[in-house]
Length: 258
Image 1: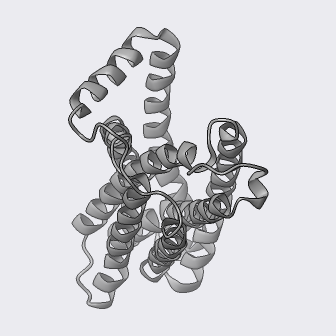
Image 2: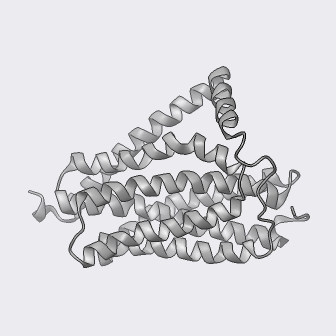
Image 3: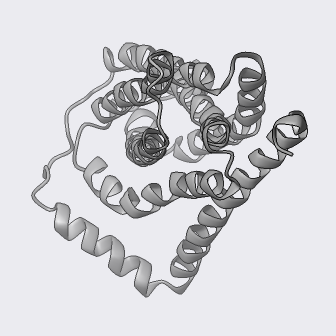
């Protein structure tokens, strides 16, 4: 049941906000850690930039499908599943490194899977928010979540750089896994008191929902332009971010890359 009153006094929203902050920070850390791991293995700027670009593509490809499904299932359960998958996917990197079996292919797979996980997690989070806070408080709640997301994507890469320089990229990936674990624990506390039933209608109208979303994007010139702009920005940001990581690693250890 959606709460009432100020958001700061709403326990369900505080739990939701905390979970989002922790999970988003972990995801932001990975945007630095994975490219560094790739560059350490390959020494290739092209491979590193390709990895970061790949991190953006699955989100763009699966986002519409994820949003349509999230509107028709129990969003908080979906979020819990996403956090569990995040733990497994992220922890696979330090485990493989410890066993000396970490490969380029695994890093690509981890980047793609974490991007897909993020798409589904965001879809579940956006779907759950109106049910938690109600229509009257939705604008304030959305602003609060957007603020913590922006803060996480500013602080997370910096924290990732500190972790990489202190412990190495493979071990630093454990921080991402830990963030999903902590987020999942917080969500479990939220799920114990929030309604988890799926919205009426189930998955029967899933195809129609996706088609409706596509029609809306095509028919609205502003939304269509912003969608294409977002796609281009996300792809190029991934490539540029990867090259930034290469530059930073070479500046930090020039003797290894002459």
